[in-house]
Length: 252
Image (cartoon, rainbow, N blue to C red; front, side):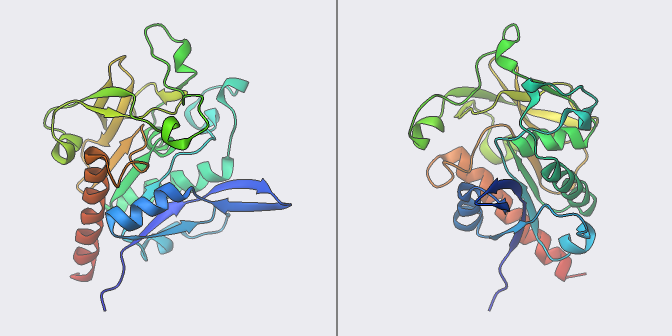
C-alpha cells in the first residue's frame, strides 16, 4: 500500500465554547485532499514543537488564509486598530514552518495570510487598508450571505512571463477572487512578484532562488480548486511537487 502524502497546515487559534481551538477552514483541507492528492494534517500553534523534527515527517506545507493579520511588530510597523485582529501563536508557528520548509526545499504553497507571512519571512512589509490608498481598488470581500458570492472571481491578474506561476497556469491573464484588506508593501529580499492586479497589488510571489516548489498567492484558489482551471492547476502542481519531494527523500 502506498503511503499517503502528508501536508502540514499551521493552525489558527480561536476561542469559543470555553476552549482555545486550533483549527483550519475545511476549504483548504478539502482542496489538499481532493485536488493535490495529499492528506492535510493541522499542526497546533503550541509552543515547544520541534519544527525540524516535525517537518521530517511531512511532504509539503500549506499556509492558509485567515481573518487575522500578521502582527505589525513582525515587520517593523507600529500596531494600530487598522492592523487587527491578531493571532500571535499562528505568527510564531507559520513563520517557523515557512523558514524550515524553505531550508529543506520542501514544497510550500502560501495562500492569503500565508502569502503575507511568506513576504514577512523574507523581511518584507505589509500595507493595511489598501482600499484607502491612492489608485488602489477595494480588495475586501463582498458583503454577501453566501460563500460562493464572497469567493466569486472578481478581478484579473497579470502573470509575470517566464516565472514560476506562469509555468503552472500559463502567461495569459486570468480571474481571481479577492477577500483581503492587507497586501504586500515592500517585497521581501530574494522574492519576485509572480502576478500583479490591475491596480499594482502584488498577487503572487516566489523566492527567486528556491530549488523546489514555493509559491505565495494573495487570492483563494482553494475555494474553486475543483472547478476553476487556474486554481486546480496550482493545487495539482503542489501535489505533484509533494510527490517528487517524497520520492527524492526516500531515495537518499
